[in-house]
Image (cartoon, rainbow, N blue to C red; front, side, top):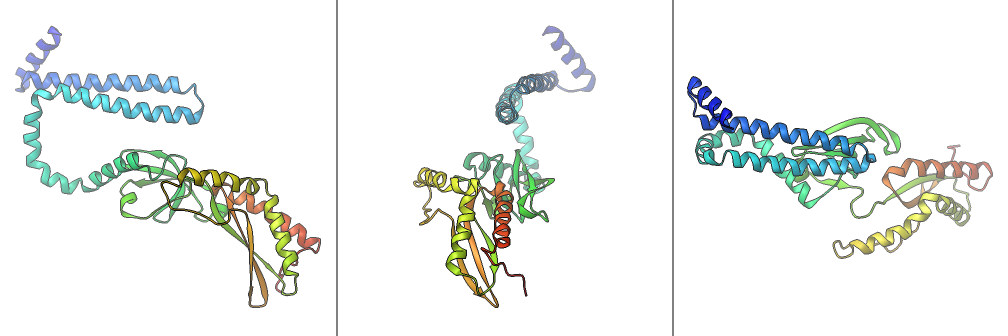
Length: 290
């Protein structure tokens, strides 16, 4: 330590800076390098875990180590903190305007951490961008885009970086918060001369036969019980249902059912295959426009 003090005094005399400042700078650099080394070591350890657990552990440890590093740096500069605050007070007005977006995003990042309007792996939609959240940062978050020209809300493969401030300034849709299922509808057009009751019964049978759809109502009931104290949300019916109406020269049947947003396309594909098979067998008469 004496060698370090001697170096600081010598170097400070050469460049005309108080040795204490030089010592603080050196200790700050050492602290940053030390915590970086710890993060690398933890990263190597977490790499042996499964992907989801490794990601969660790394994110939590990164936050903790960043806070500890900040405390160490604050302690190192404690002697000079009053002088630093005095200097900052003179430039804060100009910097506040210049860093307005930075401040908005940082504060919004704290809001996201505390209130949790969404979490990693949630499917959200904000500012006409829909995607699965893959990363949360202090100033922004990233989503793996879905939709945007790709049918069935499947991934486009593009990562979209979104500033945290949009969570405060714009409406946000969360497809996974509290319960994981959303209502969706599939429209089936048939001829006017179909047997309404028989067609509705067959369509309902097809929807309920899907392995994903038929398990959801029981799960949904359980999830709604869990959130009943936080949200005034209720449904009279959770099972699939079929509605119909006459539109011009054909009948439209609306198949309404609950589905996980990430399995929409799979379920729709399965239902349509069965509907087409029923049409081929003459059980359902699809409208062919003739």
